[in-house]
Image 1: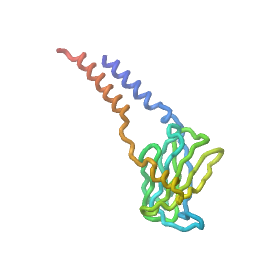
Image 2: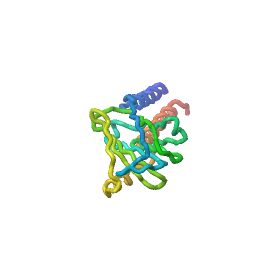
Image 3: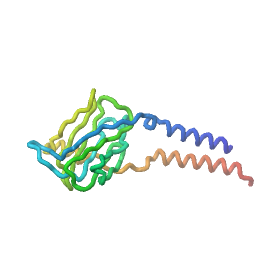
Image 4: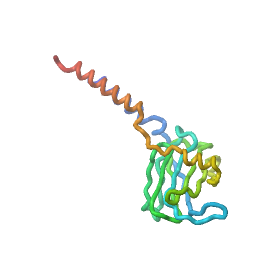
Length: 183
């Protein structure tokens, strides 16, 4: 009976490890942000830079945002599968790469939002068709600002399905142990 429980546990772990998200290739996109936004462009000292995957998150997820050495005093945080944020002391330019895992597919889109303190100073849409394209979003447009401020910035809660799976496995192991113990 112990062997049956161990085989079941090994099968579940193998399934989790080879799910499509884990088997997908990793890739990145390098960017430079010079802190110039608007028309005419004004220079800003950036303090936070956010990235949001707005296309199908089941195909592509964040691995994180990585800064080049001149911005190494900034920190990066992956908040949820579609949102990553970098922040640090004020700087006029950023060189960084966004790292992703999953399928590199036409239609992949992510939006970035630049902040100075508590103020949004700019936003861009970055898309992958046959190559990457960039489009500055008009933050004076109410619809754009509504979209930006309503992005999901919440941390990922423990998925109920994993909790249910774990409790089921614990129950199976408990039943097997009870059967093996003499009365």
